[in-house]
Length: 377
Ligand code: SAH
Ligand code: SF4
Image 1 (cartoon, rainbow, N blue to C red):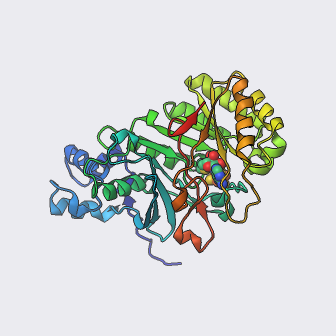
Image 2: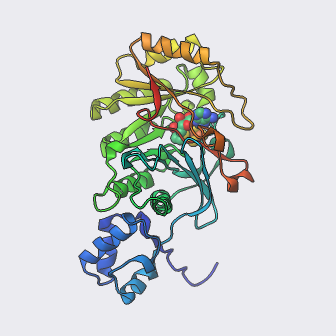
């Protein structure tokens, strides 16, 4: 081990809130209004680098740059689907790669239609067998700056085509489990929500969890305006233990108790995601799901499972998906079937593949929130 202490790693400016940036700027002897300007440059103009930060003197930049790094995830690959879905493969500072998906973007549509699906981890530790991200395992959590950086990098890229490009909606449904990277996720939310930055309303954000009970309760306490989607996938513990191994830690009774608590505290409806497989698209499961959700303000999103390499999960027939939906709607539940997007570029749910991770055999998943582009019953 070296006798000299290692220099502290530079802090990523993209992951700093305005108050944190102000504290650092004050320490460096800069006036508070300078930190506001800098925050705007970083977060609003999606600038990537000190050279682009106007109005700050070279000497001040040099002083700040000593302790602050400023770099966005580097796009390695971009693919565009005929339906407008765009898939980005980004490389992070340590060489790891993640994917980010831009959905629902049309040049001719209002800005509020651009939805970005963000990753929160490199890989995932939870190992759902039908999900390639989980099959490849967890490598590390993303920092707040790597989460906001995905949006900033996509925005910078898209503004080269359309100067007024702006992301309107965010879904935290890419790689990883947001509630196992809760602090970074919440920090990124606060930054992206800041009116002096991207100003994306919390109600335009949705987070999906595999069912991390403490995370659901913390979301209710700390970010009640954010939409919650719970990956249910099965109505019985027996099947859910297999499809979502986290169920062994937080079984359905505990999960549903947390969901009821969430609704009590926030007054919000929960979206329940059901990736339907041949195994799960049965009448028994539909009845069990309906029983679980009875009395809860809920919306059910059915996703015929996308086949991933190495997984035994098979898609049910359209007739079985329709029968499943009918059974739920007959019991008073609001149900949508998620439209497949970006299939021609392998960007539909469960089809995304990082070229960096191709070597490791990983994939990433991204979904639309229930409010977007679904066939509503
Ligand atoms: N880890 C979080 C969020 C990311 S996954 C979660 O599990 O909720 C986003 C969604 O994609 C989850 O509902 C997940 O179950 C679903 N998904 C994973 N693999 C899929 C596949 N092959 N086909 C369809 N949906 C899939
Ligand atoms: Fe992780 Fe979600 Fe994939 Fe399960 S579905 S392995 S929780 S990313």
